[in-house]
Amino acid sequence: MKLSEFLTAHMQEILAEWDDYAERMTPAADDMTARELRDHAAQMLQAIAVQLDSPQPVPDVAEAGEADGAAKAGGEIPESPAAKHGALRQEHRFTLLQLSSEFRTLRATILKLWLPHVRNLPESLASVVRFNEAVDQALAESIVTYSERAQAEHDLFIAILGHDLRGPLATMTMAGGLLREPGLSVKRAGVLGGSVATAASQMTSMVNDLLGLARSRLSCGMPIAREPVDALRVCEAAIADAAAMYPDCEFVLPDRPSLPGRFDAVRLQQLVTNLLVNAAQHGARHCPVQLVTAGDATTVTLRVTNTGTPIPVESLECIFDPMRRLGEVSGHVVEAGARTSLGLGLFIAREIALGHGGRIAVTSNESEGTSFVVTLPREADQDAPATHQEHGSRTTTS
Image (tube, rainbow, N blue to C red):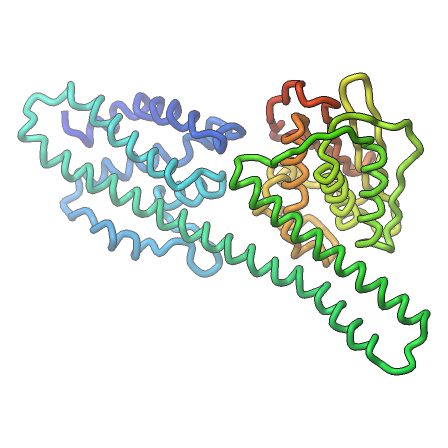
């Protein structure tokens, strides 16, 4: 049987092998649907079958990469199924090695299934050579779009970081100039000092989040150093941090009993501060941000709630992704200052929760507002719950 005919006749068998392999591409595949895992595999097989029967030579791999040119102006994905596959695998956080291994496995699977149907192997060698060229071309197209989208994402990350730092730096520069003016009143100096402190707090938060991101990626998780801590006192300190960054926002922490346990106090304070800052950024103006604490014999629960426009389902599904900013999906309305923020805070919050063996969930609707709920074990020896997401709803858990 001709290889092109085999691809068409046995496509479902090949796709089943593809699906089985793609499911093992953790952690990226953990939260993907069957349709997302299969992606453009069928279209790629159809394109390869057409190339096998085409009298035209398969383009050189380097020429294919240049021709497909990846995500050009406007970020449009080229029409090639392989190019689309590379772009979407990057979006779902596959590594480049995982992307390449998909094509290696596809090549081996097809040849393994086809060879028993070959009657005259020498006459089929030309088809094998052409098949390898077609797979190499598809791989090249995928790598090009994957790499260019990753580079564009990196460039955007750096640009937004510069934008975020420019605001507090400008505040500090202006305050420094005014503080040098002769005859400055004590009251005015106090106001300027408060502005400097707020700007410094904002910059410190950004640097801490960047360091947390780096540590998480280098060590495959957030390092946690537990010690006896009252989580309620940590929450009070986090309220003070958030209020320093957003003095016009009211943060409310109702009276509750103490919450003793073994936590990393520094990391836990960073987690709560990030959630409070996120609520201040995205919540309705002049509406308070609520931090409610609770606990039982084994766990501590922290809930941060704000009112305002509900988060779209599409945003909930990727809200803990550090490279996707809230407000860019479905035109979600956010404050001007938040529209260009890195969005690292929620990622860091999730990593700290997971590092404690806990979890973080988000719900968002018109009637109850947006709530982030953190559940942490009081002691370190409890098993961490599995990470999961509920797609298609307004609840996401990690």
